[in-house]
Every structure is written in structure tokens, then in C-alpha cells.
Figure 1 (cartoon, rainbow, N blue to C red):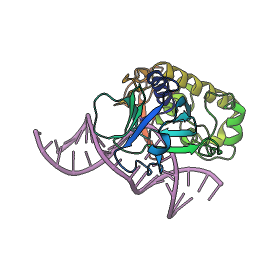
Figure 2 (figure 1 turned 90 degrees about the horizontal axis):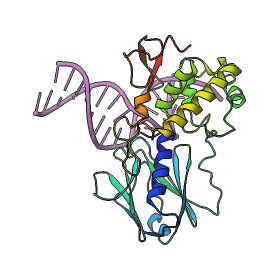
Figure 3 (figure 1 turned 45 degrees about the horizontal axis):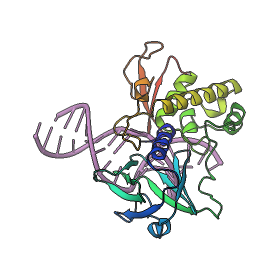
Figure 4 (figure 1 turned 45 degrees about the vertical axis):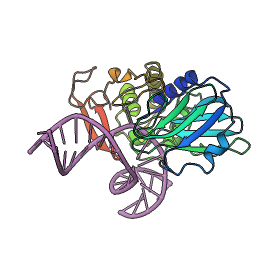
Length: 268
DNA sequence: CTCCTATCCTGCGAGC
DNA sequence: TGCTCGCAGGATAGGA
């Protein structure tokens, strides 16, 4: 479900729901695990902790409390919301004193949460590449890490250790904007191509964040608001339809287990 | 190494 | 209408 723009919108909406410094009263689990078992002693450890801030790294939400980092990955169908009516697949409830109760819901259970002591080094993100909206994601970096790689651009940009936060939708959209084929080999990239990619990725992500993310089926932020960026898709989910630029057909092909959408005329 | 496949799980739309 | 099939926004272990 959620790529960087959706997670960023979830983060912002969660911050509007829970007042900074709200004290954790109780955390309830409705099953032992999601993708992984819930951390040992999760509920006990978080009681009395204040929620100081909510951050994002790649597609991870990071709840910062007095003593812990609580990481939440949404997988494909994970969502946070303020509890009003209980629903099927509500797995975790987090109550705050004089405040709301947050609920994590995840039908497919590909999501997970993990708990990390702030006094220890956080190594959960060590394998992740740079944030695509930060300065260290630039053309020189892309050129350097793409040397010798036979991998097609699509898989190269989906790989979280190259750049962290892109998923299937935004890679397809960014590649269309860059005019580069998803099947081009990474090692064939020239510096100029890398500039195009960096610029396109940034532009797509910023527009998508602004639009509240993309709602294909069921994505909503924590306040229940859907995204609107799906209305601006140039290629994703548009196979058989006319390219908005050249009027040729948008095509779809299976690539590394995922659907790739592209325009064979506009992307070389 | 590098790259692809299968896998975890539920829900839904297409096609019969 | 009801069934089966394939696919879905992610990540990763394992095999070629």
C-alpha cells in the first residue's frame, strides 16, 4: 500500500491527532504477531512513556518516546487511525492519557512494529540507502552505485539499499517523467541520465506528498483522508490507455515479479 | 557477486 | 449468483 508519500502523510496526520508529549496509558495486542512476533514486553515497556515526536525514515514510521524508538512498517495494507469503531484486522491499540487511542490495522499482516532502546545504537536502518528528498541522493551518487550493475532501472530504483522509500507506483511514474526505459541497464546510465532520475524522483514524491499520497484501493491517512495523486498518474495502472504525452498506448509487463507500466515511445 | 522467484497473508475484481 | 484465478502499494531468504 504505502510508499514514501503515503507514510509521510500518515506521519503528519498522526501528529495532528496525538498532542506532543501525550502520555501512553495502555497498549493492547489482539494477536501475538504480524509479519514478526510483537516485541517482548512491548505493552509493559511503553506504559507511562511520553510520545515526544513522530518521524519517518524511508517507509518506516518512528514513534519517539522518552526511552524508545517504536518503529512501524505498514507493509502492503497496514494503516493507523484514531479508534472510533473497532474493525476487522485491528491488531494493536495504543491509548494515551486524556487523549486518543491509536489503532494499527493490517489485513495482510505484512507490516510489523519493533521496539528499540534509545540508549543503544539503532541499526535497523543501516542497510537503507539515502532518503530521495535529501541532499545525499544526487546524480553523482547514482552514477557511482550503478557502475557495473546489469540490473534494469526499475529494480535498481525499487531496491531500498540504493534509494529508500520508492515503491512500484513512484518508480514507474518517476521513470516516465525522466524519459528513461524501466528496462535500461543501470550500468548504461550516463551522468545526465542520473540527473534526470534524481530530478524526476524528487518532483514526483513532492507532488505526491502534496496531493496526500495515492489511493488505489484503500489507502487513507490516520485522519481517514484519501489521497488524490492517483488522478495524476501518467503510467501506473493505465495499460491500454493513451499516453498523455504522445497518445501511444501505455504498456504493462511483468518485471522481477512486479507490474511495470511504461510508454515505449516516450521512454528510451 | 548479481538477479530473479517464491513466499508471507487477505481481499477483491474479472471471467466463466 | 457463485466459484476460481490472478493480482495487489513490500521485503527478503534462497537458488540459479
